[in-house]
Length: 180
Ligand SMILES: [Zn+2]
Image (cartoon, rainbow, N blue to C red; front, side, top):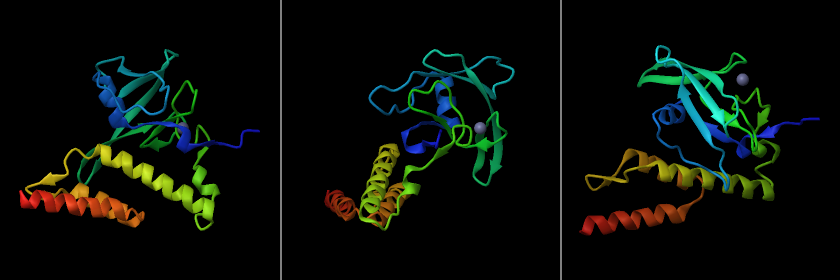
């Protein structure tokens, strides 16, 4: 019986990633042996239909749908199942991307009570690893001698996750730059 797969084990692809790859740019790879993912557009007249192939397997097509948000247009994938989604998932050793529902995905963390000792540790580890990825994505920490809004948000999240060291180090860093 297939009791589901875990989101934490999957490679995630966003419309932004897919569009970057269409342009020939690379996305951040995770894992020891990351799969070879290729994205392209078959018909230049239909630039919203993206073919995605994994390790040279037959490509699967996903249509992008652009929605107007207050801050501009945002792309979503239309999955074959009818769901409009912000992320596609690839299972470990999988050969095609799909949405959460198609792959029957759930969070490993949702099985654990975060209040139990083991659950708390795993929760904390997960939050920290997510924060580390976020930090990699912040291109600029300072702007005019102050932290950027993004970095401040990041620090607030660190504090909420109990990462006081990170916040203290950042304070120290700001002091150093002020004295220069
Ligand atoms: Zn689906």
